Image 1: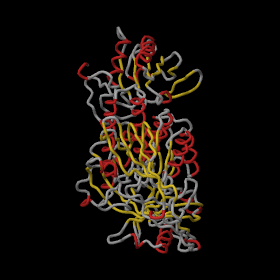
Image 2: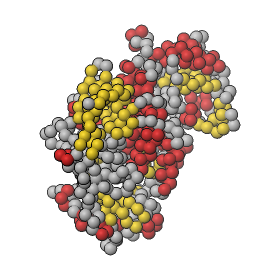
Image 3: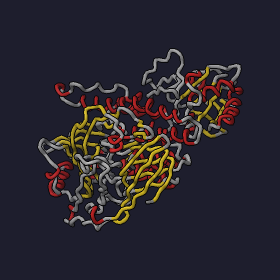
Image 4: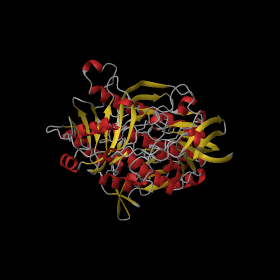
Length: 620
């Protein structure tokens, strides 16, 4: 049996797993990613990458432009939604109203990052290509069959399908060629399918459930397409006639991004809370020419309600692949969704009885509200749907999964490179879990708001300010040195930022040697120390402390190499001309000093030592 060592092993190639892999590889941290499916998903699932997720992804060279290019091909950055009986409904109710347009405009003014109205399948492909380009080792058709922790690391047994049995091709039926499958609930790539910016996200279900251990068998799907294909390859192979290779991987840390039913979470005994399963949906992916319908309406997401079914419809660019999701009616089973019935449902959804339809794929997804009660179990960290599963109403789940992957990546990088003490990793749970619970409950509230009043009992209220929910969330942990009087609240209005420690560093335009940039363009690679115009002592202290502690830190002096073109930097960041602000790699403010001090080197060394866990709390 082959043995390997890697600093980080990731389980699952969905949004959380792929963003973590790309982020770690960009930071030169060797990483192996194991995904039980043959490729990333072909189902669109979540739709869109919101501004905060893009802020965390954009330091990775080229990724923001790639995602923006994908979005442009499917209709640009905007996400229009409507309620209708079909795509030909003469009087659809458009949900994208003037107030929402103002929210979108407000978000665009608060960040240089672009949102990307792109389907998850395309975003996953882009992240996969980037991660592999940067050196990440992505292993598809590979499943975790055992995991054991000890104080020094994690021993994981991987099983890889190396010779699949011949698959049974789907029978050709003219315009309705179809591959039917149910995606396993403990799979990784649908597991991170919680929705992102204004999308319908569906969490996969079915597969290897029951009383058997989730590690007891290997059942990869050969029916998913390759990353460059738009249709399924056939029925799953028979495990009895396939061959496998087992590998023992010794990892320093594991990121479990293995879906909302997370076998790793179950194996490690991490409990969950929430409302659980909320409903089931059959997702039908098909190919048809809808050019006249798509271009005339310019609606990306339709909520459909008619006499036959309720569900959603995600349009493509006209010619090509589209997806309709049908909510299961009471008593309905997967067997009811025959190829013929799926074609009939597509025609009803489009309002086109004679539409020429070619079925590409159909799968069952669960909609749920499941929250892990801890995001860390020893050396294993939970991300994406393994940490927080939510209904699609509000469309932030996918972006939250992307943020999880980026977030745990920079924390692991600091520890693995010796910049932070291992205890620093406790800050992941302390900071991400409140945000995950807030977002999941907000989307649950949106779902309740759409229900009849009698059914809303026990559902939270919807969030009133979506702008604050995207760019105004705060964090609190030992990696944030809070100021006296801080209310330690979870949200603030990013339109009037406070720049308090624990808050996202505000966007302001700067000039750097004649080049227009944002303050946010400085963040991502390491810590950044921004010193006021008379804060030269702070900048020099930053250089000395960087060398003493071996911490990646970039000091900058405002109105020296960085020109404050608006004149508002001191006001917005809440410091005087001789003050300083320390910003973390994720763009959150960790500490600030309103003015100068007598020993800036000693103060800054103490600050970084406390933030990184290198100074015992008892010694502070």
